[in-house]
Amino acid sequence: MTFAPQISVDPSFTAEIAVSALIIGGGACGLTCALRLADAGVDSLVIERDRQPLGSTSLSSGFIPAAGTRLQKKLGIADSPEALTRDIQAKAHGAAGAELTHAYTNAIGEALDWLELAHGFQWEVLTDFLYPGHSVHRMHTLPQRQGIALIQALDIAVNRAGGTVLSDALAFELVVDTDRRVMGVRVQRPDGAIESIACKALLLACNGYGGSAKMRERFIPDMSHASFAGHLGNDGSAVEWGEALGARLADMSAYQGHGSWAVPHGSLVTWALMVQGGIQVNERGERFHDESQGYSEAAVHVVAQPNQTAWCIFDEPIDALGLTFPDYVAAKEMGAVKVCEDVSALAAVIGCGAETIGQTLSAIGSGVTDAFSRTFARGLQAPYYAIRVTGALFHTQGGLDVDASCRVLDVTGQHFPNMWAGGGAARGVSGPDVSGYLSGNGLLSAIAGGTISADSMATFLDQG
Image 1 (spheres, helix red, strand yellow):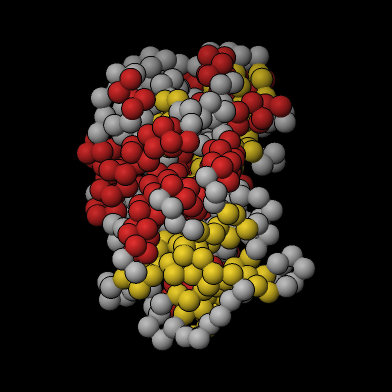
Image 2 (tube, rainbow, N blue to C red; image 1 turned 90 degrees about the vertical axis):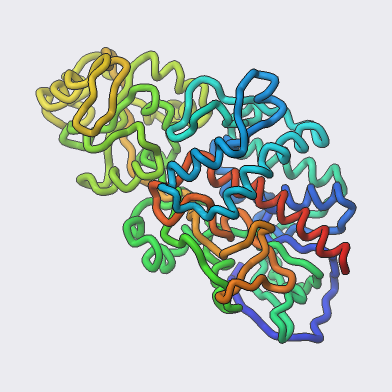
């Protein structure tokens, strides 16, 4: 299917299909919104470009940070939206949008409880370890610990609730009136046929811009040549539509990278390996950053190394933890994980000097604080495990500026008459820099944004 985002002004727009709420994008944000609207008795339609809902969510680990949930209370975990807000702002150096952060952190716990009680989602809280930046155990996941399981559960729930997802439908044109009120959209089908859909309210939940080389060069040049490990639907169409209508953009230089993308296998390797004591070295066998700071900013450090690659080094206890994560299991099955009986074997795999990698390993140990200010609980012991990785771009964290109700704002700060944005289409809560990304911010924005958008759209439609 071809695609070129367009805007047309047609106050007399007519269409073959008309719905109250139209949602462009069947990722976690769009499906959450559709499910919430169905529960509120609002007719909606999700337009999805793929044959089935996937989006960035399907490529994630499926971990959602939420505070004050029923499950946390049951497990005796003391948490609150205020504590989650503090952690988000600490990671973002106080630069995350305050109003939106407050809205998301207050909505996400209730949203997960609603999905559990109303739709049977069986959440688990990850208690094996803390992701960098989180002060308590608050990562919620389905038992499969995969984003694809989350998106499938949401899709099933939407269908059971009576919602409609129109797949293989590529939205390419927004139709507005002279007051910038969205009248509807035009979509292209696989056979080239064009269909028109009218609506009273629109949610842009389609994508970020990580898949657009032009936009990466414009907004995040440091990652312009890095591997893109996100969904190809992240082509920046929401940003293009918004800019054409005079929308305000925010935090466009923010993104979620990952410093552990196995090459050449093209597979994510959980950062839990690094958090639990693993290290990264370059092709010379030298460490180059503090691996405990987070996987997003690690991507920048890795791509700055010779040949834009590094090696993740760890040992048997960490390997055992990794086996509880499906992405690590998959990487191991593909042959990405090399097992080395001693330092000499490890040096041979990396292609560096045995003396150099030996010195690197001997420099870490119990209670040692290194030159990067990382303190280790223990050293690594043979046999050693090694994975060759690069730094990858997963999804962007900047987008259309929105208020606390997820209504899109124009350059003057006024909201558009009937347009909302969430997920990758909207600004996130990571501030303007890669280092501001707190683990789970993407799914936090998607689930909370979808919930908030639905509630706001339902109120708007009820008021006529």
